[in-house]
Image (tube, rainbow, N blue to C red; front, top):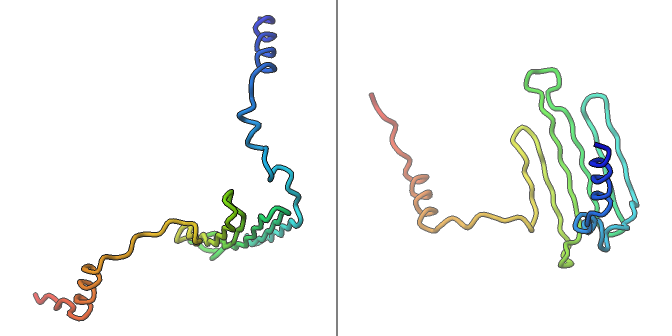
Length: 135
């Protein structure tokens, strides 16, 4: 049993973990935090912000809506900004509440435009609403 434990220790020490260490390499590994704030209230409200010297910045604020009801829900809104590997500044704004997570940013995929035939059909339906059914 002692030999097995010794063999495992030697195997772990000799293992190649360079693929794991690579994730912490690169120009951002030595980024310095320029600003870091956190404020948490007693009623579920909070806000935080962080900024680094390599252009990463983010902030968020949140609160508990309807705290004394059975429909209590946490909501949050925030923004983040960073530079992509291609050198493009990426900006993300978001809200999260009882309606879900709603991100906004030019880097996010968007749905294709509505086809012209569908737009004409919707306009026709709006201009000619169906008559109510009579019993």
